[in-house]
Structures are given as C-alpha cells and as structure tokens.
Length: 114
Image (tube, rainbow, N blue to C red; front, side):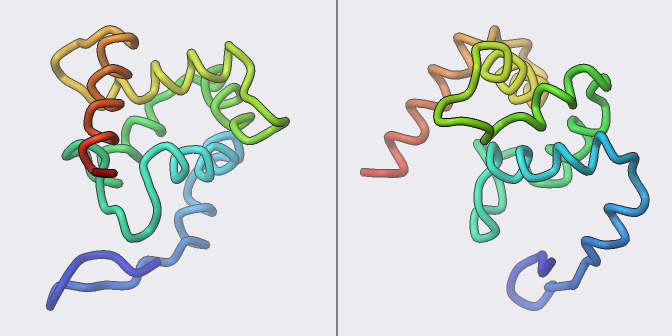
C-alpha cells in the first residue's frame, strides 16, 4: 500500500499488517476500508486511516465479526449497520450519538459531492 503525499510517500506491506493481527481483525479490514474511503481518500472527516485502524483494533471480537459481514447480501442487516455506526462513532472524541454522527457524515458527503 502506498501512503503519504508529495515527497513523503512510503510503501507499507499489507501482508505484514495481515500477519501481525489476528484473523478476526484481518477479516474486518475490507469493511474498514469501505467505511473510511478509497485509497485516494486519505481520511473521513479529518480522521485518517491510522486512527481508523487503531479504532478497529480496539473493537471487541463480537463487533469485528459483525463489521466483517459488511458487503454480504444486497443490503446490510440492522446489526451490521448499527455496529458500523458504533465503529465510526469511535473515531470521535466528542461522544456523538450514532444518529448525530450519521447526520454529520451525511452533511459532509453532500458537501463533497456538490
């Protein structure tokens, strides 16, 4: 994975990351990537991939199992949606409720689109 910008780019081995964490956490990495944006989007509302990864690594095994199910089926189940919102809320130190955080994120997404 290529990270950084301008003159401070560096290559990070995804294989090394996968091997360093337990399987449950590794299975949740694609969901983290989906929730935090593409490779070209370095952050979601000012929260970088490093913080997102730290929050993912702090999740319980039960939460990781649910988050890892993101992408199964046509629509995510309510428990997947709730756990993903809880994960996104863990980025914030302002203790926003999931509803408040989603409203905040929705507003940001709308601003970026237009």
